[in-house]
Length: 241
Ligand SMILES: *Cc1c(COP(=O)(O)O)cnc(C)c1O
Image (cartoon, rainbow, N blue to C red):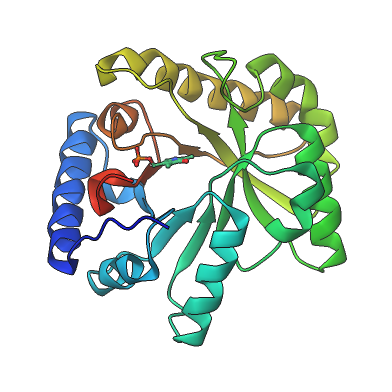
């Protein structure tokens, strides 16, 4: 856990400013700000920052490590904070998919078919249906996880067979660059890919949701201009990690 501390008032101020920036970006693209969900990424931060954000009405929180996620879920349960919607955003090891089945609003980081299949099997065993996004590596960066566009299209018939995961849409992480404008083609490609996939899926008599989880502290405004429906923001809210 980080030892960096941040005051509750700073978190409230930061959240207000992020909301303003989300609204302005949505308006620039002639979109309704309410079409964009803010996931506050609390990874590595103590539980107190979540409570501070919750006080301002922030209910969606993202974590990238299963152990930390489950600890925070348990703390929230002990404190009776049941309004929180938890998002798993970190990479998932195939032998740990059973731990991804839990009280989570959305699993953003299903980055290959094998993970989707195991999660489906584990969800079936737990008698539940998990909401997931398929993580795409549109930029082709080797360091990034995710399906390529071609892999994703090829995986559709197999994905259609999965009845215990509900595919709500796509997620991506753009390459980190100094000028966020450089990420625009990545987000635009995601928007295009979603349209292609939805059409292809329909031909297979199957549906893929329309969520696009994209945009972080450095690039969320560009992502919203290009159609993001979910942004995942950490440091702009809770400070550096
Ligand atoms: C850490 C993380 C974020 C948030 O990053 P910031 O730059 O702090 O906003 C978003 N998405 C994923 C997948 C992350 O791991």
